[in-house]
Length: 118
Length: 112
Image (cartoon, rainbow over all chains, first blue to last red; front, side, top):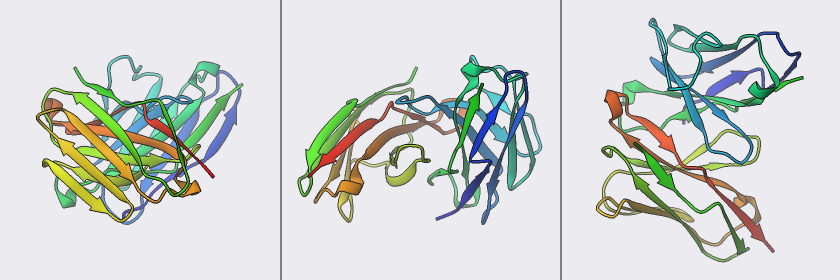
């Protein structure tokens, strides 16, 4: 299957700092990438849909000024958590869809980034 | 709105068979996915059903009944490594985006 990578896999930062997480599709082009957040023993919650070359679409309740998403190329999307606070500590996962295969296809998930804000 | 319901936790014995159920109420339907997620890792794809019936893939099978809003994942010949969370996700053409909505996941514990 297709491969999606995330970097970093784990990050610890101080409250008030910004953290950037990268999501790359390694062997396919993804015009759309998705960013999820997952708290312990909870489901994946979609934060936003990242569209290459246009603004991201945020889910209700997700602050677009706090979670900045940039999808500059067909293989890279970045999520920046600005002015991070302890409550932002979570597991952030990106996924991508190879639209070259049409809609009837699976999403490929990155390995996730564990963010801990002290 | 979207609502996906699955049991929180299940336990089973190594070598046995376990069935994990998922019921859903969504605005439209465009396919149901099952994913396996080990702790601290990303979900991995297991199966996709869009038509009624049973899809078999090795030790894992997935069933769908669209009229009942119901699916199950069947795991046979359980192994210790099958201990994981199993996520049911339903895709609906909400706003044309076709983005799956995930259930909370079922934590499966396989013991010797």
